[in-house]
Image (cartoon, rainbow, N blue to C red; front, top):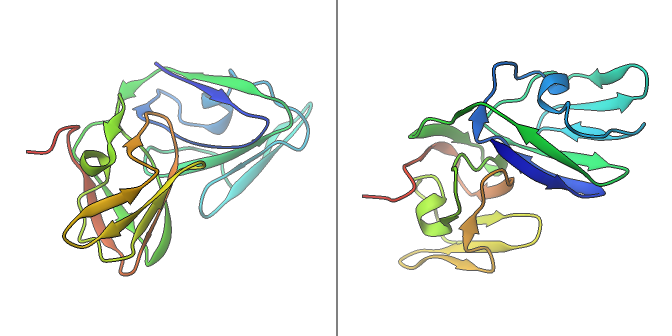
Length: 170
């Protein structure tokens, strides 16, 4: 079970489980929506209209990205499903990529960041913290862990395939 507190304003979140129905309406049915509430992925969005529901290009959610949800009033999200299988591959674009946290518990950033050939100056951030990659050292900054259900943005100089490993690297 994934349970999250959703703030008034923007909340970055991701899914660490696969539900039987991954449609926006089904996954977010526990959330109290108001007119003008919005849900965005890196490439598309949908908006809530009272009496109608969601309207927009974003109709299903995945475990491959994070989402940004803008609410007029705080609410909560509860989703049931099967935990994401690890290892999990994702594609990082040149520049910023919206990144999920597929883990079922809190994991240190050095173990949680997907395996990738990071370069000096690459960055990862949450809504409240960030870290930068230093060659020969690793991640350094205020972001030290990845939380289940949280959303992240990673900026890399050169994109490519990355893999989330188990919670503890071998």
